Image (cartoon, rainbow, N blue to C red; front, side, top):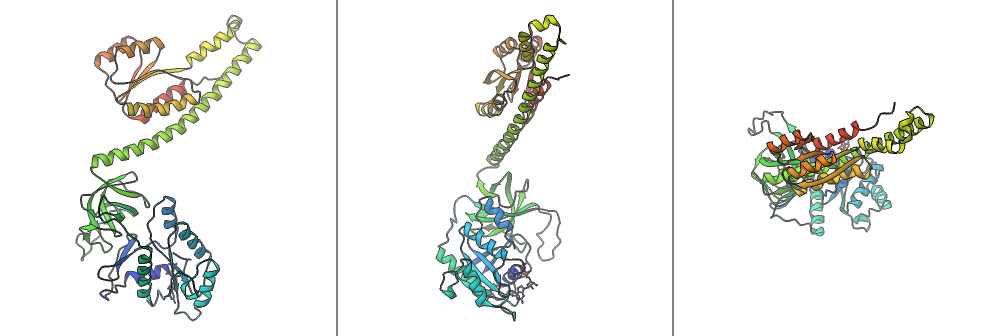
Length: 436
Ligand code: GDP
């Protein structure tokens, strides 16, 4: 992280191309949101490759912790700038340790001492002036001291005693996602073709393999293939390794936490529950709006009736019993239902939303609720109260359907919560009295 133009992109480029183990140029990497730099035979550092702190801040806001260490890039010619301070704040808030890369030391007007002093003024005490934050003077452009920066990262990682669980169910965070329809032609990597929905997953627990089922946000994947930042297929991705995963049915969002589940069936059910929760929330907001409208109209209607009664524009005969009259009329304005569902869970979910209408004094009456197929008792009860029967996801036999028809009982069948609630809403809206 760091202020604009202080050299984040240059540093990432320099790191990408520095393979201090083999000493070879790292080769062309693709933008997948993160890349790995091997430092020794057994150690490597993963860089989250998002210059600027927006993505970092967004992930923090979602409660996702993807970085263990922040490398703060400060240009030695500029010193501490406004965004430098923001980055320090972000890192502090996330309780992530900072390493300062004092960049552009190759420049004639670079002033390391001044930069260190400025940092100290803002609470970042570098080791060189007696503090405990490691600072490494570097040149991203000229690739000076990049190895020292990597060493500093390993030192802090060791001090922090950063550990993860390489076993157990996979957990991770989505760094990026996109629909890969480019159908890239690549002579070296013959495996790159149209991958469809892909997402970069940073593995934070366990080992991600082909066939693993992940849920991230409202998206599900049975991992079809894994690719590293060079576009090569890999067999698995272990702790702290970023990997592009193909096979997503829908695209997850950056910052979504991903976790392994046992079956696709279970994954889909989890997503359905999540979607239903969101739907319920939306319906709740809708119902508040509808009931407020009802209240308004009902009030107007009452006022209008009173006014007409007072001014005699209503028939005298009717006007005499006007109290009763208004009550009767209002009764007709109410909507009465009997609700049956397949299982208690669903019934409860439905009632939670429907009760909101009632809380808001919508003219909605529920004569009874229950679980199971529609039966004779339901018909009798509905007939008695002039109720409409709502059968949600539950069986309605042919006989019951015929009987309801004979008894002139409206019987409605639904399988989608949203449709059923919309129907109730429509019925209530129909009953909003028109004031003429
Ligand atoms: P970012 O906005 O933080 O990603 O900064 P860039 O990496 O795009 O760098 C901004 C400018 O500073 C570019 O013109 C780079 O060439 C230049 N620059 C970056 N690092 C160095 C460095 O170490 N030395 C010098 N002289 N210039 C640098």
